[in-house]
Length: 238
Image 1: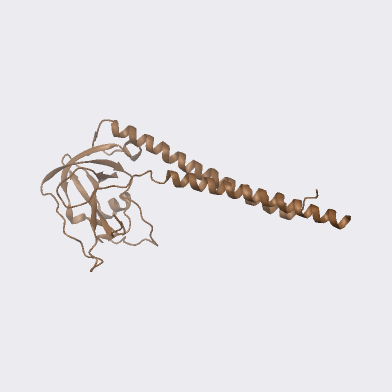
Image 2: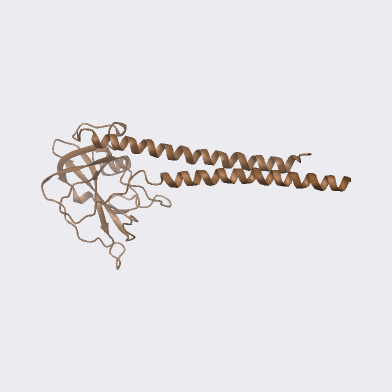
């Protein structure tokens, strides 16, 4: 059976790409599974106290933490486009001035948007005086897709995303390089039903099977086309 060069090359390229994409989705699923196992282990570990001494993100990411201090509402940031139960809203991110020095950002929870005023902030409470915060250390207060660098002006409260290092440079606050995702209830009318960080493992495996299925389909089509071409050639030579 004579193999035609260009059709065969196209089939091989398609197979190579789809097989590679399948492995990439498999690797993503494995990474999420490993992260989930790490998070479960950290949940059983002793709580780390956050103080003035800087803690590297790699040493505390996803660990349970506790911090005592006073909220700084004048530096609050509202992260836009954070839906909850199909309702639009904000994450309320506020610096906590630690009792023994230093500052850490706290993602206090979710707040529904005022539907009649896009920039209107629904009422919520901020504890006065010293408060103790229990939570989980995260590298950021959640990321959402944005075009350009919206919300980067100093003191602009409603933003799409918030980079800890950039905000520290902008405000001059001595921030820890992570955000505490608050877990305990401080009677502030905020929702703290946080999404799991490892959602989507089944989706990754589904995409993996789809890509590998496409590779198998490309191979099957190539073999079918080659066989059909060979039969036509035999018929013309008969």
